[in-house]
Length: 103
View 1 (cartoon, rainbow, N blue to C red):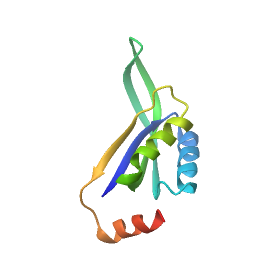
View 2 (tube, one colour):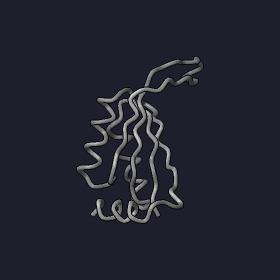
View 3 (cartoon, rainbow, N blue to C red):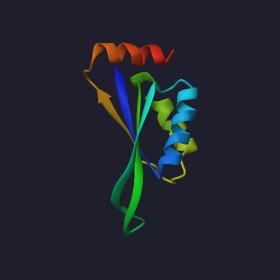
View 4 (tube, rainbow, N blue to C red):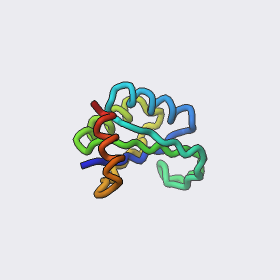
């Protein structure tokens, strides 16, 4: 079983920093960065508006807890958004590649 982890970050530089650390630790196989999104959210009683980036991480489901813990260690936010999205199906060639990339 595989998972994608959705992470919001302060910008592209932070996304690259987190991605490279996790890739070098071999706990994710691939990282995608979506450079710009607008976020509107409640924080400490105030409605906030921000520009952030999205970091998408692909890994095996067995490594999700480790990835979440590492992202929280590295991330600049006090309460980062780090969410698992389970991959139920996909291209078998891609899933085989993903498995091999984590070895």
